[in-house]
Amino acid sequence: GASCEHVVGVCRSRCAVPPSETNRPSVLGGKSGGPRSKKAEKEKRTIVFVDESGFYLLPAVARTFAPRGQTPVLRERLSRDHLSAISGVTPDGKLYMQVQAAPFRSPEVVGFLRHLHRHIRGKVLVLWDGAPIHRSNVIKEYLAAGAAKWLHLERLPAYAPELNPDEGVWHHLNGVELRNLPCHDLPELWRELRRAKERLRHPDTSGRACCRRPGLFDV
Image 1 (cartoon, one colour):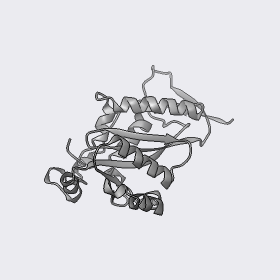
Image 2 (tube, rainbow, N blue to C red):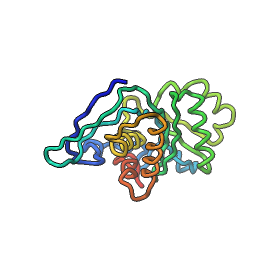
Image 3 (cartoon, rainbow, N blue to C red):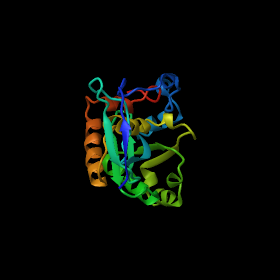
Image 4 (cartoon, rainbow, N blue to C red):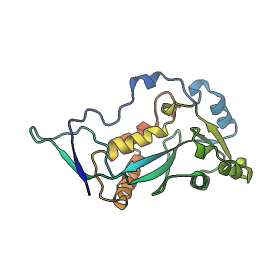
């Protein structure tokens, strides 16, 4: 198939948070508390931030190091093939993720909510955006069928992805762990994504700090 080349330069930072985010008010109320944090604390719910993203065969190109005069070149096949992923991250950095080749629809979102129920004891408070797959009749029927006993869903403010720390997960996986990494097919991409996800879960990795984005919650 067709191919293209990318020239890569010098990397200055592995995981930077824009300075403006450090001064944002906490979506959960921070130390002073807030409606969602008080509800979660009162009902002893585990807070989970949820979001979806995609991972493409074409890599995220970022600056890197190389010997002087030897510019790194990435050779890759032009393709829009990708994996779809949904994940949830808790304030203490625990990460839950599911990946598939097809786009996520409401039934698959329900499957992920069931996944959370199997792995998290007690009640859960999910915070996510207002995407149609999050507010469809499929989701409402799932809650009405009994999930509402343990699950409460809250919508984050519109046009404010910076309030969802799960965005930090996607940023770290795409922009750090998988940067400059062209994959030949989806199985190879899935293997690399799985390894990157496990590195992100490691307590010593910088990726966990990306999950704890400033101004969102205290850990």
